[in-house]
Structure formats: structure tokens, C-alpha cells
Length: 266
Ligand code: BTN
Figure 1 (cartoon, rainbow, N blue to C red):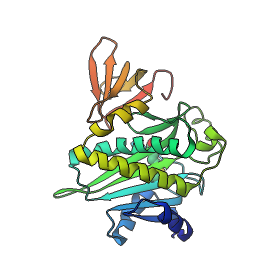
Figure 2 (figure 1 turned 180 degrees about the vertical axis):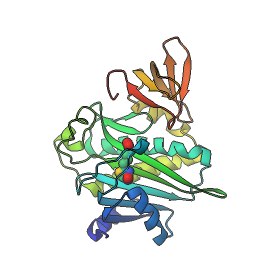
Figure 3 (figure 1 turned 135 degrees about the vertical axis):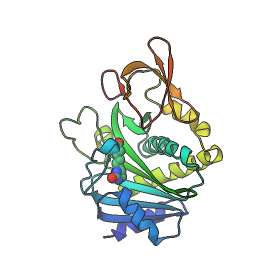
């Protein structure tokens, strides 16, 4: 069911050209946005919800989404002018946008943990799940789902050392519609830059400037064998440069491997 009050509040502050839906309860906004996009000709569709009953995280994990607590939203890009092999970089574009939006909203520092987690105080505050559906002649749509921990007062014991919320970091409560609009504004700006080259070259400096891994020792959880090294920045294609202890250089692709700090999450 639609939350019409939130839908109209959001419509009033969103950048033009986007159609927004705010639902009370959905399975996952990544699924809901695909259904809702059929009701509009808009090329960029936003679906947000007060709660998700089957919130999904990366690598098959679930994403806890209690009623009214945080921002659960997904952006759908219809037939984007992006070659399928370049679409995975959109998740980095959203990661950068999340970090910028967090700074806009709070004035506090936020960083990116490669490829797309937003981090405050060395803990994860925002996760992104990007999914794509192909058509015969390109991409049918890309869905970019964002879970931004806004007003959570606590996390389960097992997450306390690596998850945080804006409330825990700043002591203030944040408005979910304002947060969604801040994120969309930054995303649209960065997406337009991305479209010019279909890679990260126009966003490279900003992305690497926000990258928390830069210069840090990391553990690369490669299915072919775990190793440690020092992270450099990303390449224009969004791969992370890692210098191994023996001096060898690796380029890490998101999706294949995870990167952790040597002693914790970052
Ligand atoms: C991660 O594991 O870090 C990604 C989490 C993504 C969660 C968001 S919440 C809104 C959207 N709907 C989902 O089911 N997942 C994403």
C-alpha cells in the first residue's frame, strides 16, 4: 500500500525527471521498484518503503529493515544508455553519491569502503545492492538499492563492531525523505558525469579522495586464495589496485572478491 504522505513529500523535493513511490511495506524495494516502474513512463523511478519484509543484502545475505527506522530505497534506470559490460560501475557511482549525501546531510566525514559501502567512524552505515536485467539489444533496466542506517539506536551484538547509524554517529534523528532526496540529487549529478565516458574517469579523483582503503593494508578474500597487500586507488574501470607484499600489483574486480581490513571491517 502506498504511503501517500511520504510520496508527495518526496515528490516535492526530488530532482526533476524522477518518479517516486513511497510504500508502507514491501518485500524488497529492489523488487517493488520493478513492479512500480510499469506504472510510469519516467526513465528514472524511485521506490522507497517504511519497512521491508525481505530486505536483501549482497552475497545472499538479508538486510534488516524495521518499520520507519532507516532509509530503504531503490532507483530503477530504464534502458540506460550504458553498455552491459559497464553497468557494474554504477554501484560505485552510487557508493560515491551516498558518501557525498551523508556529508551534505550531516557535515560529518563519510568515506567509501571499496567498492560501494559508505563508512562513518570506521563502521558501515550504508549498503548497496545493484541488479541488472538484460534485454536482447542491451540493458532493460538497472536497479540500485540503497539501505542507509539513519535512526537505529543499536545493532545486534554480532554487528556492533562494524555497523553504525547516523543517529549513533551524530546524536540526531534524520528525515527519511530528506535523506532520499539528498542521495538522488548526488546520484543524478554523478550519473551524468559517468554517462559521458561510461567509466569512472570523471569521478576518479573524488572517489579516490573518499576511499577509506587507500594506503591501508587489506586482506583480499579471493576465491583462488586469500592474500594481503596495500590498497591503492581505483582504476577508471573501478578495479581496486592492490600491491602485494612481494611487490606484485593486482587489479581487483568487485563481485569476484571481498576486501577487508587486516584487523576488522576496514
Ligand atoms: C549490502 O549487503 O551491503 C547491500 C544492502 C542493500 C540493502 C538495500 S535496502 C533497499 C534495497 N532493497 C533490498 O532488498 N536491498 C537494498
